[in-house]
Length: 141
Ligand SMILES: [Fe+2]
Ligand SMILES: [Fe+2]
Picture 1: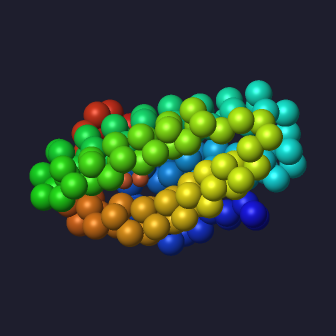
Picture 2: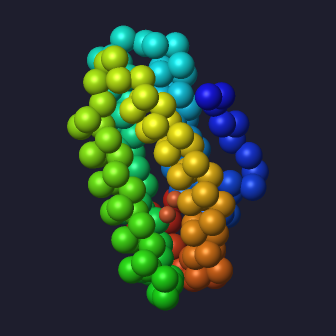
């Protein structure tokens, strides 16, 4: 699988979220490179862990914006985020060094989840979070 280049169409227009989406894509790409190059499993496994951590942080940020913007689809969106963490976590527990099939499966899942989610659900909250005040710090705009 080839790495996924960052594209302007991934932007939602809130710098804090766009930076996190780039960060998330960077980790997905690190994982693609790591698995494709059959890197030492310890390294690949650590990338999967950091992906879960980063996703967790990013989802919390996004959910904060949606809550503040009174986005009506918040709960549904949160469920999808939780489901993603659960799936990746479960997969990561099962994968082993020689399990190329499962390694490929996680790559396919992550790559398609990323593009589908960022270009799909993540665009639906845009009118709510860009027209209202921003949560948290005021130095991110
Ligand atoms: Fe997102
Ligand atoms: Fe999201």
